[in-house]
Image (cartoon, rainbow, N blue to C red; front, side, top):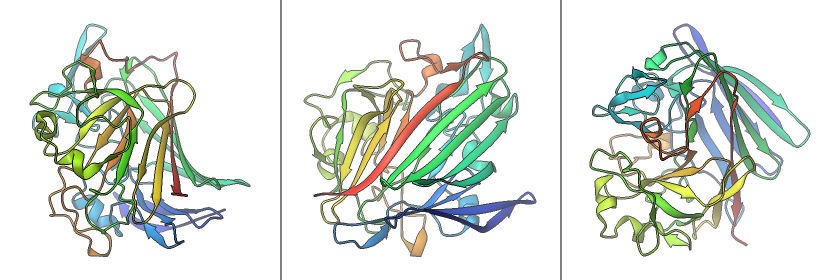
Amino acid sequence: MSITQKTFGSKNGSDVILYTLTNTNGIEIDITNYGGIVTRLVTPDKNGQQADIVLGYSDFESYLKATPYFGSLIGRFGNRINAGKFTLNGRQYTLNCNENGRHLHGGNVGFDKVIWDAQPAKQEDSCSLKLRYISPDGEEGYPGTLTTDVEYKLTNNNELVIAYTATTDIDTVLNLTHHSYFNLAGDGSGDIFDHVAEVNASRFAPVDDNLMPTGDLLPVKETPFDFTSPARLGEVIHADHEQLKIVGGGVDHSFALDKHGDALAPAAIVTEPTSGRTLEVETTEPALQFYTGNMLDGTLAGKAGAIYAKHTGFCMEAQHYPNSPNRPEFPSTVLKPEETYKQVTLYRFGVEK
């Protein structure tokens, strides 16, 4: 195991550092203390050939110019809050809106756009990067001073384990997640249509024309959202279903995981047949936002000049449901001072046998 670091850039006089975590099987992960962004993730295919399997940039300046949250830590609230408003303890809070009158992924300056305190560490069978950010009361409109700790840990079992904890001094709402775009054939290799996905969810959350959950959790059976058995993404994305059209031609929905709680539970597995690479997701969270890169439009050029066109990457974001502060039928996202927010999500990288 090894962990190295180098200067990646600077912002407002503070150094932006890029840390490289490497395990004994040759998996390498680059993570920066700016936004906790995973900029590069190299894994072997079935023939032992290495490739970077996440979308992103090779230089810091590009992340400042334009990014659809490539590889970022997301907070305070992952996903959307309708009109940027919610009521807590009888008081209405108004958040900054950054997506057509909606609050998305923490607002104008979410956790993906701040510099975190970082502490690298190496253990016998893993190496890790511990990040901390203290969000002041009122930042982006949220109540409470929030202290968030996130640990990225790469193990010799080819797992990236992301462990989150957070505390607040007054009642607030919180929904943290990670936003890597994966392409298991390799960054810049084209669309994800041949990827095959399986999600351990028998229900999903449909959305209205404003991309907000209706509050229902509908059965996936006999819909394109049925990933209870392996489904090829190209067939799903191009299926004739109103929900696929609403979100821009593809999947961008929360799936209600059949198993969740204090212990990690299997959430999903994705396979890319040509490379043989597999990605398994386990989490403690109640939902998985599965996104097939519908809003990528070919205007962004990433590493090695790769053009990020529509459907060239997918995200699997373990989290609570969108707009939960306004939906009492969903599990609560309220964090109180006497509580500690805890979440663990694991990404396991492998190959078909």
